[in-house]
Length: 207
Image (tube, rainbow, N blue to C red; front, side):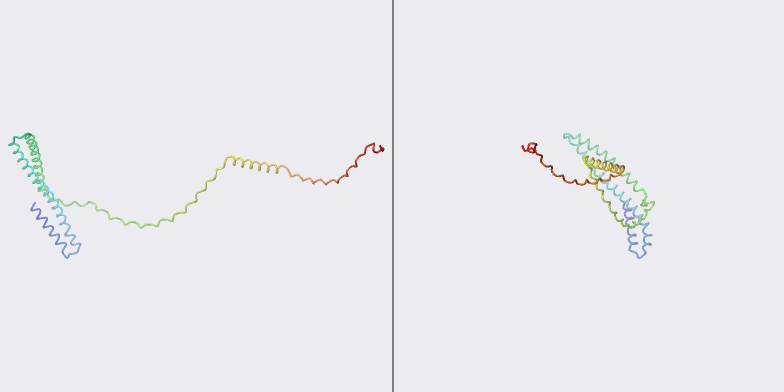
């Protein structure tokens, strides 16, 4: 781990020197790319080794404590000591198995070569510029809603039907018969004198 830490420090120093140089940007980028890739790979490996190493230290401490507890339970005759002893021995076996696995993982990680950071196979396409927004068309005037026709009652409908039939019958009759000539008003008759009153036969004969 110490050797890996020295390599990481060396690469960080070289990259810092490139950034502070007076070279053109494209030259700096060409020098930085391989060093940055190597640095990233070593940082990843170093982080893995440190994590596994810390876990081993924790397991060693837990195992040492369990072994001390087991020794104490063996020398104590208090009640339930056997239960505590059995539980401690079971935990000790589990921690030792975990420690062996972690040590194997650490050994494998130390021997694994550093893998450079994977680059995407196909670079993401550059985003296309958004099209200019087009002006929204002017809204068309809405057609006025048609007024609902008032519904006619049965009486009104019957009156209209009767008037229409009467008009049709009248027109039919007037077309079939010629108009009659109007008769002149009758001339007024002269007044007749009132008849003289009749006298009786007795008066005529002096009776």
